[in-house]
Amino acid sequence: MARKADGAGKVRAELEGVSLTLVDIEEALPFVHQRITQAIRRSGLHSLLSPALEDLERMAKDVQQAKSQVGVAVTKLMER
Image (cartoon, rainbow, N blue to C red; front, side, top):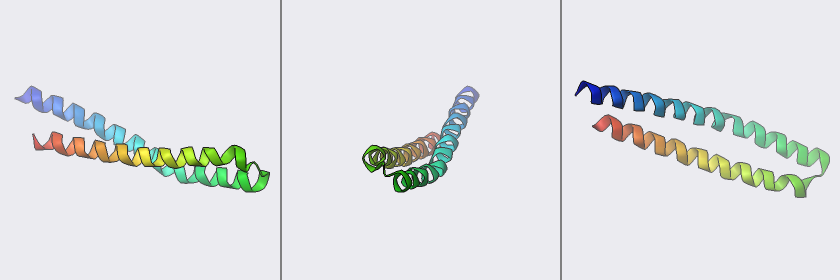
């Protein structure tokens, strides 16, 4: 049984590492969004940069979903 706990502990640690990475990305996204918005305003490159904002918003949703999935996985792992 100790091996299973060690394995589960290792997996939990790896999932927590992934979660921290996702949090880091999530914290950086608003700053990137602001920079792109400022670049659109200052340069007038709306047609070039607007798709980048759309991609960034999609990525933000994907990161949020991934964080949720990691949280569910950690919860299930702890229930064992």
